[in-house]
Image 1 (tube, protein in one colour):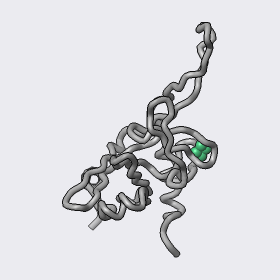
Image 2: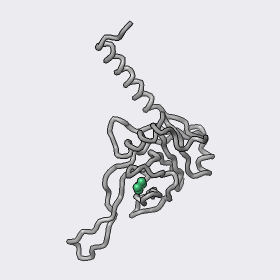
Image 3: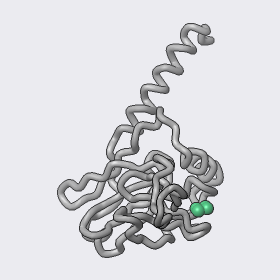
Length: 168
Ligand code: FES
């Protein structure tokens, strides 16, 4: 039997709701002890490549591919930039806050007498995700994908190419 346009709309809204439910589900990405020891892991959560960092006794998760040009954030260094913990993208050294995914840049206010550069935010550029720990396992719940962010482009692009992290 063929679906009428009305049924097709119903089908697609069911699929959209299913996808939303899937995105909202917490996915186990590994054992707490293992991630604390390795300090970072990559994982696929509902087909999205993410990186989980463990730094200064806290977990953070974000899209693995940098919002600027898709650089591999799991290979970056973590530094304190102007009081914010940031991952430094290894490709062009963009600074992204671990907690919020904001891109930081240095700016000078020419009207200030000292004109010392200060770190400013470009706003949220990299999608971060929620990390929970339960009974020795670490879970990641994807953030609300209905609000688009710059890193979504590279998350989709690398999804199409297949995981760049899976072993062959
Ligand atoms: Fe990350 Fe350019 S790709 S800074």
